[in-house]
Length: 432
Image (cartoon, rainbow, N blue to C red; front, side, top):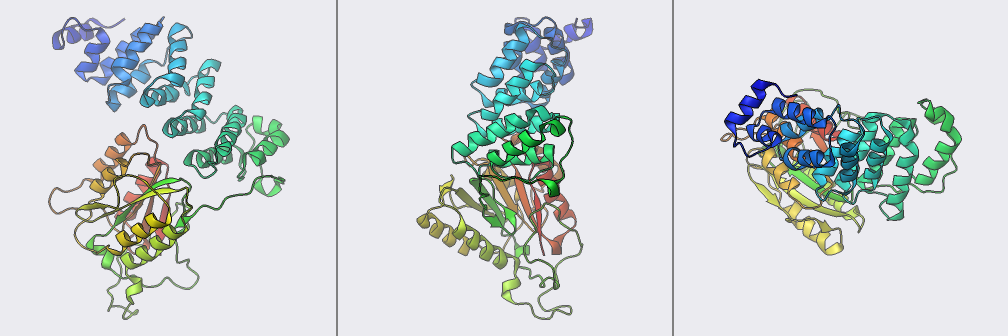
C-alpha cells in the first residue's frame, strides 16, 4: 500500500480526478512512480498494466520509464503479465515493445522468455536489436537455436549484411566462442556441440571444423572499420584542425585502423608540416585529404543495395541529403562532388552533426570520424552531457555509432570517441 505521505503529496500537487499513477507521472518524481506501479503490480489486471503502458511507458521521460519497469519487478504470473507479453509482440508503438522486451528479459518464467524470443522477428529492426541485446545480457544458452533461426530469417530475406544479422552473429559468437557466418554453419555447430553449449562451455575455435554451406560476404570498410549495416550515415569532421598533416607511421604499422575497436593512445598532437625530424610533409598527409581519398574509395565500392548519407561538420553542419540514398552510380557521383567540397575551417560542432544524423529516417548505423573534442567558442559543448543526450535519443533505436579518430590527437578526443562507441555498441578505430 502507498504511504499516507505519498498519497497526500499526490493529492496536493495534481487534480483529484486523475488516477494515482497519472498523478505520480505528472509529479515527475520517479520514486513515487516506482512505488505506485509496485502497488498496482500486486494482483494486476490487464487494465492495470495497460494504464502503466499508457501513462508511464509512453511518457517519453527516461526516468519515468525506468521507474515503471523497476516497479514491475514483483509482478506475478496472471492477467497482467499475460497482457504485457502480448503487448511486447503487438503494441503499435515500437518504444513500448522495446521497453517490455527489456523488462521481460529479466524474468525467469517461460512466457516472458517466449515473448523476448518473438522480438527477434519484430518488423522494426530497432526492436529486434533490443531483443538481441536483452538475450546477450541474459546469457542464456537456451536462446542459441532461436538466434540461429532468427539469422536464417534474415538470410532468407537477402539481409546477410544487415545490422540485425551481424548482431545475431556477434551474440552467437559471445555465447559459443565460435566465429562463423551462415546460419547453416551455426546450426551444424549447435547440433554437434549441444551438450557442451547447454552447460555454458565455450568452444575452442581452433578445434571447430564446420563444413558450412554458406559463403561469407565480405562487407565494405572505411579505414578498416567493417560496414555491416546497409543503411549508414557518415558524419565527417571538416573543422580547421583537419588541415593538420601527420607523419607517416613507422615501418610495420598499418596505415588503416584495425577495425577492432581498440585504439592505442600515444598522446601529443601532430607535428607541424615544417617542424621536427620529419621535415616538409606532403599534402597527401593532411588529415582531410586522407579522409577524402578513403571516403571516395569506400563509396566507389559500396554494393548497390546499400543506402547511405554523408554529413560534414565544422561549426555548421552540411548534409549531402536529408534522407538515405541508394548506392547507384549517379548517387555515387553526387557523393564525390560533395566530398570534393570539403574545406577545413571553423570549430567542431559534433553535437549538431550527430543530431542531424539521428534525424535521417531509416538510419541503422552511424560512422563518426573526428580528430578532436566537440568544441565551439560560443555556446560551448559539454562532452559528458552530449554522451547522455545521445543515450537518450538512441534508447529505442539501438543505433551503433562507430567512431574513427587519429593517433596524433589521442587523449581526451579519443576517450570521448571510445566512450561514445562503447555506450552505443559500436567500435572505435584509430588511424595512424
